[in-house]
Image 1 (cartoon, rainbow, N blue to C red):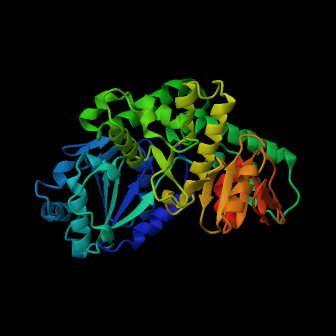
Image 2: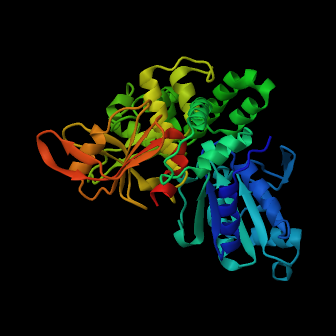
Length: 451
């Protein structure tokens, strides 16, 4: 079953068309669906001559029914001469092509010098547009970064709204898309249905293979093995760039500890194992972020690194915390809090220009707000697994006077209190600031609604 990512596909097609002497680098964690996404989107550009290269192959071959050239298509030289020669031999003289050619390079991290080669190629002719993917691109050192030659498109797991569409929940999706804070009427029926569906998404996550098996009813029985295999694939991907220090870690346990520690500032000493330094633990986490398996959420207005980290997908997190029976496994209240924070954070990140736009906040008194957004409105966002109060948000509003809006994500229906008074006992001056309460299922529309 194909799961459509309409908005991301539109962004991809526009980005390809706008390429001028540049490479479009499609980034994302392993198994997030980069290859399938690009191949599907390129069908809409069928009028352009296309060449597909998979750098896990030495020579031409077929993978999943798709015909690819291999590493030998690049040739032995680090410059682009042999690559250009092979393109001309395949498509004909470049300057005579009816439309610019699209060169799709997959598994690019298997042949790191390819990025320098493809950047050189893109700079030589506007008749060549390069699309470049791999699961470890940010962990690969290149001699020439050539930042002006690259554009980026980040592919994240399937979002909740995309899941609803694929699952055939069109009435619920239409209701979700029509919600407005100006509308004071709320359908309790639809609200409860969407809360339940987000609870299901919290367990499944957005990895295409998992959702495909779930929606295909007979495939549900294979979910435990599928999610275990998927986590193993992710583990091996990061291990591939850790070098000899890999032996010091059971990497999945590191992911589990990252998941359990994701509610607060990460103390790297809590990831250390025997014979491994704090620096090596930090390097491990940085490589995990580079492989897009975790997102780094920086502490707002901090001059030192006091970041926290969230796992990139709710379903993978569910597996790490609760085991492979992701649909029926028992979830404790503590784990549920982690899962809601992670799911909401990932939904917000998927709507931002970059994952670096999301921060968190904490006070010297210990109050903490899960997320801070600076645009389109300076907003403090707190995530509750059920209902909860607004005390942490009030602290943030009192100490950070530029905060323009408070947002509580919970299971409650959407509403806005334009005259909310933020106050904390024995500290700061109370102030009036809008408080918006949104259900978790509106996380993907949060930025839009703030705008």
